[in-house]
Image (tube, rainbow, N blue to C red; front, side, top):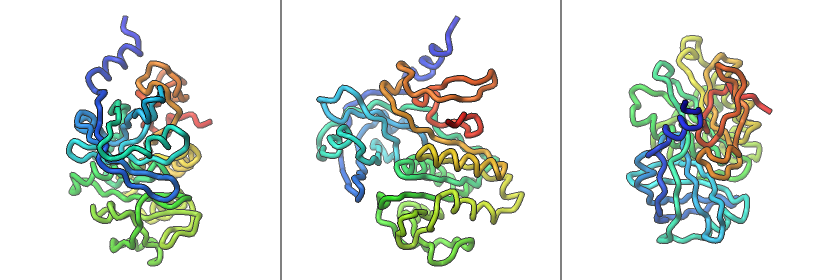
Length: 297
């Protein structure tokens, strides 16, 4: 009899690759934040919004670090990260032309429902990259999807915000800061912070999302779905907001990882399943889960 773990291993067979990626560009932003572009053809071809990579930060470090994929462009992937330890600090010191061992793409990604084309994307801090990847995916079929993005940060955003020309009549005109990439894609986006940055909404991402959702009719809400990634308290708050409006919500969870391919079971979370409560691995069973199945600590 095949066990659940064996079934999972078979599902991941030939979908996760190890390759020596070439670092092409490194862009530094305030708050020890970095955006890297890595040539990693196999990973780029197989990546889906919500998947991530496990990268080697330095030859002297045995443990890799999990990093969300922000964008795929031809045979390259973009990753955004914030330095939180010595591993990522060493990674940030790498220069274009150097190689980086990339294991990926890993994980079950977002699953947008065609019957709910109004997609609300909510990203916080280093949870912004999966929202960018998902938005990029949705815009490829712009006739069928209507994304709205809300991004939050308490440190400077990892991009130079600019004033949006896309109308958001549900907000005051002075709340106009947006991520340039979303603006170029013609996707409405607004920024939220408690740090007083110019043009940003003064409050939490959930406060800003609540304002937008409150303007929707019952028919519009019936066609709306929420996707989110960020710190666990934010995810819990977004899940509660979505539940209050009766909306489906998918959350991308963050956990410490060792192997990132399901072998060590060190990143388990409690999830409600059809057979009762179960421990699921964020790396391969997730990182994306339906919010109403997550048992929040």
